[in-house]
Length: 452
Image (cartoon, rainbow, N blue to C red):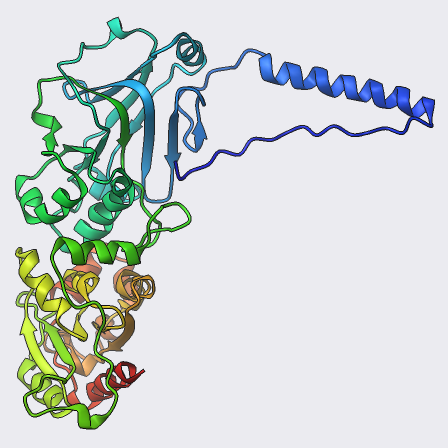
């Protein structure tokens, strides 16, 4: 396991034989410490009300539960584990006399919502909770209907699934971090399942598991395993893997994506000289403008395209859709990707190494969440990051509110009215009309990065 449990240890002290009084005193203290140690080890254990997250209880039972910033999860190994959909319970049945003795001291339960955004109450409302329950006798649990020879990972497709950003940061990356170690020999037990989601990400699901997904919510059978992970391991940051707690990194994940979608471009172009620009455009750096047709759309796309071509870019415009394969190939073929803050920029995961991401940040206090969503994650992906913060004059909000309105003068006051109000104003009702001359500087910076 990646998580290691550290135990305190008593160390003996030596005493000088030349001083009999000190020897007698030391012997007395030594015996007292030994007696105290004996009591601590063998005294009866007072059982808590629930499995304490962050501990291994007990060691022989191989049940480890963790509570982290974004997710709770339990790893269960070497036991009789029974998943009962009717009662939303994962039973852990003692498999030996020692396990029975262990369970007598730890006959407790834990409720887990297996979705990796536990701090978000809105997201968690649509996540089915599962009770992880140790029991001492198999006759108090439903009998096995189907016994599996490989481990299982139980997770939810509730929450914000369906939004491309949350699909990756809340589900796909945590699933990779949790299940990749099994090298395909793992079954995915999915609660709150969505067939369209499984179909959309079928390449990735089949790359991680050699078996059909089990839609546990619609199962009458009791599915039995010897090893189960309930919940997913997730890094605190967005679109990230914590290598100190995982055998993998974001570099590994991006290689996994290239393999799953047969993406050929590993590195972005390195421009050696301006003369490398051929008339046929073969050596020109490729710029992708990620379009949005509903909210935060570019209103002057043609102007942006014309200016970028004059700078030496080969330019493409595309909007992300449900066809992951198609859009992954488009993104991977490019050296620079730009777009207004939104889920479409999540496709940065398909960019080649050393590519450049340009995030256009809408007007109105969006800088911090925008940079946390895409700016910070770019570092571990080996993607160079630039952002361009628009001014009020570049926002369609000037058509909706007078110049002296709080929307312009004090965005903080709008944010204090709650997330839904803030989102409605600055994200849902705002389009972008870029100042071409001002934005040109950002595209020139991207070219400079491609020279490095």
